[in-house]
Length: 523
Image (cartoon, rainbow, N blue to C red; front, top):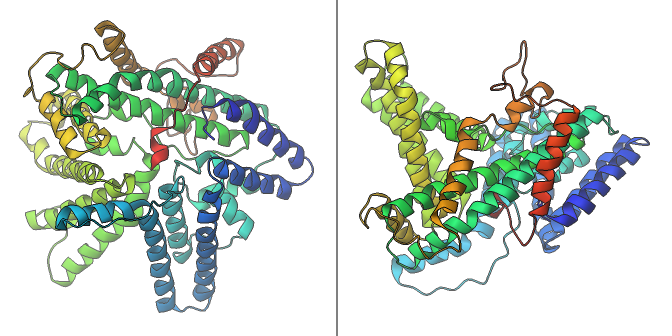
């Protein structure tokens, strides 16, 4: 069941929320159990077999977490480490079988000329997000960050339907205290903030992202078929898809935040105007923020710490302060970054394009970190350096991200290379490949690239507009708050805003039609 569908908006969601409030007036326990039941129904809507596939994994992970708790109380350190490694291996193998088996068989066939055939494997929805969430839970239990949990709480944490399919990737310790404190009753602020977030998200997905899709899809199809695409057209394909996935993912994130808020729960922020980033490090701190958080906390940091200790045992310096050597940079920064981003690419999808995309962003990050070591020294002072780097960094970052999105979107490395050659002007400088592709003119195409670009780069995002009401966990404005809204576009529960949100919601609803999944749901 899609968030952007009539059954979800006008049937499933109202019924689930209404019953939740009714049960909440009688029993908090049954209100929370209702969310679990609704989440299972939501997950099994497309294919009931999904539940039968994912349920054993949930049970096994719960059992492993309980075993970890018992071993921790008994202070059996080696056994704890063994169970944790077993749990991680199980989850990785579970994800690998369903998501990567066909790709691995194809890779073997490509490498050795064999013709192995694997029976079609059903890919459970949201398996990548669910798997990372369960791995994080086991690590948190082992580290003592989760001290107690029940089976009901664990199921609620794993299955909560607003973030079940495409995140955000949440932690048990940030979610369950909210469920335990939630009033489970009607709250006008939660409902008004939730409706506003959902309406903004629906508008971004249906009115903007889905309107860009017909422009870029034929261009990628033409590139896949071997057609040569001119420079201007290739950049339209690159920037167009960048904006499409931007508003698609931003729209999903807003809708997930809004739905969760109906139940009095704040999901962590996951999207903060990443196209405004002035360097690629900043980009990854704004794009899919909870994935970046997971990769940093559970892959990059442990790997860097282990390598640092290994270097220290050999009498070699680390990489910090004055101990900045080329060897330290390579071993403690470049290698962990490349490996982490390779894992990120593989996590996103089973294909060569995702591997290359992940490694490319790893290279971007390494170059960015390297520039931070030498770049400021080339200017006479910090102020002049920042005056130059703000606009230059923004332009370079935007162009690099757009180029990488070509690889992310393309179906093969060959078609990605074809488009990248076009972007470099190797197929001519004009709009070859664009004319004749659409029933509309070039002005329409330019409009649907320029206007969304202006919205993404110039207007405050939804979290900024609603910052006074903590639209995401920890996102606040005002004295003592971490975030402040840009400009004067601040949402408040007023008649003017109610009318504006009604128009935005209406534009989203009237444009619903057909099957239009969120792009990140495939991961």
